[in-house]
Length: 390
Ligand code: NDP
Image 1 (cartoon, rainbow, N blue to C red):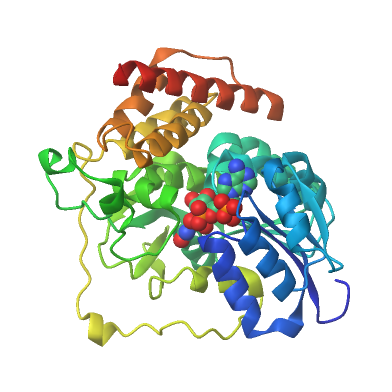
Image 2: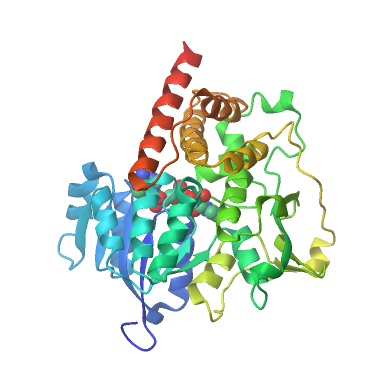
């Protein structure tokens, strides 16, 4: 730490849903933090605004075409400006006390790995990085002695439920799932879902990509893979339970059949606050849980027929090797195509499944291999979508 009570912080994906929630929490206790880096992809205006407000040392925009805009917006300040994916990696290596990895998609993998290499604390929201390169990331964190704090509400709940327990004492982990906006819809109804309907999540306010993933339930599939890497209890010991109210964020059952769970209002600032203050606790202005008002909690098993993405992800991690990275790359492209209205909602999972079945590259050994697999999966998925459209 730079000073007994001041922590240096970098936020990757500062302009996004998780990034802005993190900054909201920092606003509550501004003097405790010094902002090293804030990053965005193309939203130079918002990035410049945040960099000025938080007096960041450096602002990085990954889309190089936005460099001049950002530079002009920050002219006359002391804030350093950089652009491009390599700049993200360089800045991630500047070793802040705490890094928030909240870039969406596999694009967040290189800076997240660079942050882990510093051996400090990394709060991980960017689940796609862990899905594509879980083994590599976990090994990097271990070798560097980094602390990896899960931010995804389910994994943060498991992490909290494991405090005071040990992973070898666990019998089962249960990831809860809201079921998304189409939980009760038939396949026929889902066939004509629009992007606007898919991004309107009933409980959580999130970025577009994760909202669509929640609607297809691929999000739960990605989270299953994430949990498999973060909490090595064996894939057969990780269950998924649909819980529409999103109050219980996940549960850990120990060998003696004692089950611990973490509960809270569905507000991402709660798990982010837990990671930001860890191992302490911070005050937040989030809505406290009022169980009497909620009155009832419901549970049901996921429906693999209407939501095949969970099984697809389970199979992908069971096979292992290149398959999780293919699943992720194909899903990113299929979701982007759905948001542009190039494919139908139900086609997203179908396309991912067909891409996984269409080829089998060798097991990745390093980051370059993973990026090769990710790139090929994207190219193949784009080509398949083009074929579907003609
Ligand atoms: P958003 O889409 O709201 O924000 C994404 C952020 O990443 C933005 O700052 C964006 O910049 C930046 N970004 C986008 N593409 C790139 C790229 N190619 N290179 C570098 N930066 C990029 O996403 P969310 O905040 O919703 O999600 C972020 C991550 O956290 C995802 O992995 C998601 O799965 C995970 N997560 C999110 C939750 C949520 O509640 N939102 C809950 C749990 C996990 P710009 O604004 O310029 O486009």
